[in-house]
Length: 464
Image 1: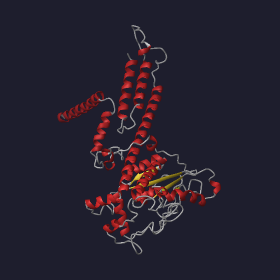
Image 2: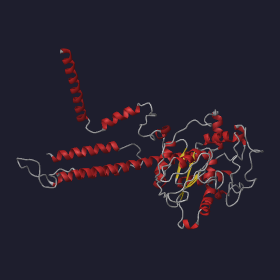
Image 3: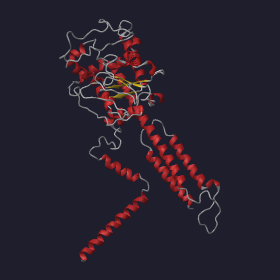
Image 4: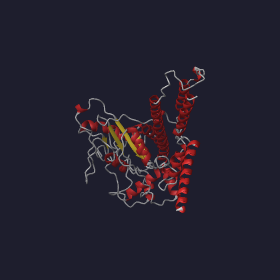
């Protein structure tokens, strides 16, 4: 009996110590910082967390991009802010420019199978194309391989699409349906030039030719002299990497730059108009300009950020998250460093374009995340103002104070509760408005600190 009583008293003592520790912790760290830091430490050690990223933020350190990212180019706010007023119930059309071996097939399937829509695309087993109609209309909102097919040619480039898509859409549907001009939102996916090049070589090695590509420019097809073939026969299957790299007419070289440029600026495929260096320099600048002005572009190497930016741009949500697949046929190829350097030299314009695109992509991602945090802060501040207005003490505004037997003099206007709280609130809001645009780190903890201190000081002033 005495032993049971001893353990009972010991248990009660432990419970009291635990409660006392909780109370002390609340006094030492009254805000939610301690809890948040504890949760962060737990999440950083969880098995599913990589690169120290928080489990609640899947974008923070994808491939360690932001940890190593240092911006090289200066972009304007217009270049970084990408939110379009896409009206799926109206006449707006998303046009997907599909560049070979950039992961465009996977992204194209996301567009027709993985978006939350009022009227989802109808996809049937055994059929390559899906029917993507607008709500209440027999009219498509998506121009892509998996919705309209290769209607403007196999893997049509920017020059072909911008000249073909408007006339195709007008011809396909009755003229009376779109008296107002359509809005066309062009999108694309880019990939690291070396791995894209190796992937295309492996694809050609298995028999791919893309002979059906038209390469239409300025209303005509290129001649055989303007666009010679790298092989004789039906295809180039079985070619070695050395043979693939040796062909001077290989369209795999700098393919991304060529497919995103306005080829009319360089005389299409007529190489005699200007020197090769001048031609490629003009195409590179054109490709950068078109890429910058597109509604959206993603990068194969950053799947989750690509998903996030698409959702932010078009205000559409995907059902299932994108998956980063690092294992491809190209990555399984063992390539010597010298060969990789040679590939980079053959694709020097694509290398420069990709560095530009990657810089713009990551800056857009950072800018979008900052906007999201800023909007969340503003919503929290508005909610706090509403809450304080509801729970304001009964004596505020009535001229009555708390019990004071000595009838102390009323505080001056400079130190009144209302003016003090208003000054603190204005100071807090101004601090948030003065945050630099380039700041990447979360600042919502600091905001919570300031608001907690504001509430504390208000209570002190009210009960003096």
